Length: 513
Image (cartoon, rainbow, N blue to C red):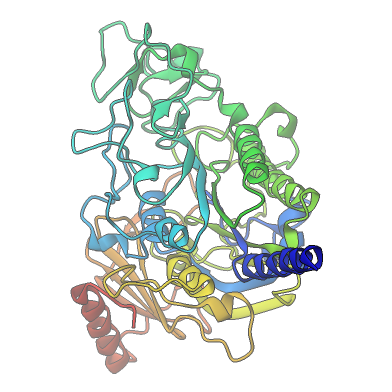
C-alpha cells in the first residue's frame, strides 16, 4: 500500500510539475540589430538577394506581424525601453551610449527580467548590451563591472559591452572582462593616450576596412573604432567570431537551464557596423558584408531552434524575433553596403531607416513562434518591443506594479494570435533617447514632430540626408506608406488632435492604461 501511495504521489507531483512548466513557457527574445522590414524573405526580400530560410520558417509556422514596431530608431533607447517598458525619451541619459558610459538602468528599477525572476524564471542576456556599465563614473574595466545586467534581473550575462564600432573589443561575463590579464590592464578613454597611438587617421593604409566618417580612433583587428583603448590584449576578440560565440554560449546556457523555465535575451550584433561576418559567410548574399551579415543572423536563429528541438524544448518555448531599429547603408565604414544594394530595399515599403522617425526607422520585422500554441498566420495588430514586459508579466501571472513599465501594454493575446485580440491603439516613435523628433501613429494617421526641424529620411544614398522639415506634418499611412504627402493643411482638426494627444503622453509620464 505504501508503495502504491508513494507511486501515486510521484506521478501526481510529476503531472503538477509538468503543468506548471507548461503554464510558464521558456521565452527567447531574438533581437536583431539594424535589421529592416524588407531584409528577410518573409517580409519581401527577393531570394536572388537574400535567403533567410530559418527566420522564414519561424514566420511560416508562427505569426508574422505587419505592424510590429520597436520604440526608437537607434539601439540604446530601444533596448532601454524593451527592458524597462518605458519610453526612452522619459529618461535624459538614453542617447547612444558612449564607450565609458555608466549603467543607464539602475538597480531597483522593475524590468522585464526582474518580473520573470519573480515568476520563477532563470534569466540571461547574451550578446550586445550597449546600456552602460558601472556607477556614475562609468565602468571599472579592470574590476567589478557593476551595476550591470545582474543588478536589474539577469542571472547571467555574456556581453559585448557597448557596440562593436565603439571600444573596447572584449567580452564581459557577469561582472568581469573575460580573460583579462592583470599584468596588461585595460584602459578606455576619450582622448588619444599617447602621441604615437595608432588610429584610423594616422594608419589608414593599414586598415582592412576603411572608414567613411568618424570611426577613426583606435585600431583593432584592422578596423578603427570610436574611442581609445590600450591593454587587455589577451581579452580581445575577433569581429568575425562574434556570432559563433553568441550561439555557443546561448546553446550552452539553454542546455544547463533546460529543466526550469528560462528567459534568454539573445542580442544580435550581426548587421551593425563594422559588418564583419565570419569568413564562411563571405559572399553568401551577393550584397556585400551587410547581406552576408543577414545570412549569418539567419544561421544564428537556425542554431538556436536546432538546440530547442534536440532538447525537446520547442513545444514549450515562445520565441519572439524582432529588431532594435531600421536599416542603414553607410554608417561609418566603406563596406560596400550601398554600392552592392542593387534592387534590394532593406526598409521594404517604407521610407527612412535608422536615426529616423519615418516608418522605416521603427516599423520592423516582428514574429512570434510557439508550436502548438500560436496558429500559423499573419497579423495586422500593432505591437511593439516595449510591450513585451507587460505581456510576459500577464503570460506568467506576475502582478505589474502601477509605477512599473509605464508605457508597456499587455498585448499578449495579440502575440498569441487569439481571435478578437487587441493590439496597441497608438505608438510613439523617437529617433534617439534625448528626444527632439517624434513619430506618433494612431490607426491610419501618422504625425511627425520634428523639434529639430530636420529629418533623416534615406538609407540608400551616400549620406544620411538630414533635410529641412516642418515641425509638424501629418500623413495617412493607409495610402501613403512612404510619408511623402503632408496633408496637415487638409485635416487641421486631425492635426490638432494628434499634436495634443502626443503632448499629453509626453507630459503624463505614463501611457499604460
